[in-house]
Image 1 (cartoon, rainbow, N blue to C red):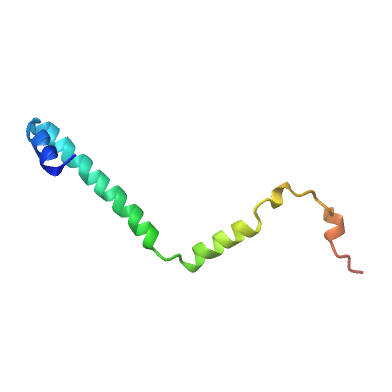
Image 2 (image 1 turned 90 degrees about the vertical axis):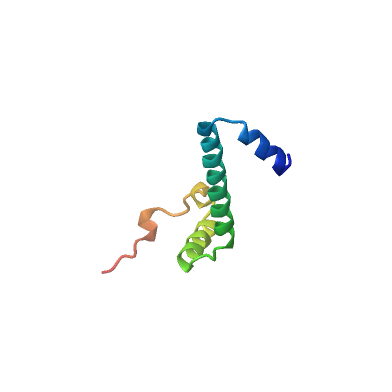
Length: 77
């Protein structure tokens, strides 16, 4: 659809419907600018650390327990 065709269609709508089109375009503009900003944003150290830990421990909850809690306690006399 060409811009001229879009303008012609929107101009035939009532003022209330034109406002809806305007609001929707503003919504799309904000939505896609937020995604673009998110893609360009550098990760903070905290975000990178959280992702690194998440990736390093992924799947560990499915691993069988090799040691009991008693095996892990160090006994002092």
